[in-house]
Image (cartoon, rainbow, N blue to C red; front, side, top):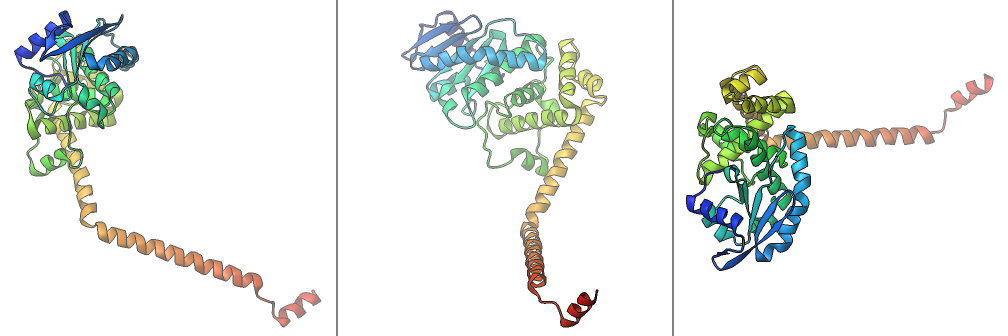
Length: 313
């Protein structure tokens, strides 16, 4: 997640990057340095830090291949073992990781990396995507919804927010008209709570819609225009041949139609299941009837009159 964090946390994180042996809440920090990345970690996470240095080059190469852009600096990645310590640092209970592009920094709550859907690889790829995008697009040009949506796309749909997957926040918001307009997600994301979860769902959904309707090239064209200094309204119009409000309206209609059919199916689920079961029963009966007739024809003796005519011929 690319987000604003308290200034005191930025100062502490910067201190870690400069002096990793600093004690933080009584915990000594270690440092691993490779040619591509520096990893600052709480001492118990030495093995995880080694894993980061191992997988980082492949993730970087994958992202550079997707966007055709290079990440020409070595970021610093901080691994925090204690969840409460991480939450105090970033000011949120829902965030499992964050990127600070201005500091070339990624901070990961490693305690989350052992629970689904999070893995160190997917989360690191997600946060590294933020750094790559911001390395090529000027601050203020890349909308937050696009930034977060693309990062979820490249990390297999996984974000760094702890989502409640047993219910659709987006569908409920669409049904009640409480969804967040994209213009409100251009410069800021909600701080916490259901609004933050909804913003993530919306970001993921609209990027998926663009990919389905315009392909990967549609996304890449938008990013190229943003890289060249165009605003998001110009970038969308020049890349997709429609305005951003029109894109948003089409996306809303697409989601609404999807919700309609899901609602229709759920409302008539028992009737549909009964009808399907009846068709299956009828098909099974017809198969048994056909087998019975075929069996009867195979063993039935011919009539004497048929034998007489067959002998004369």
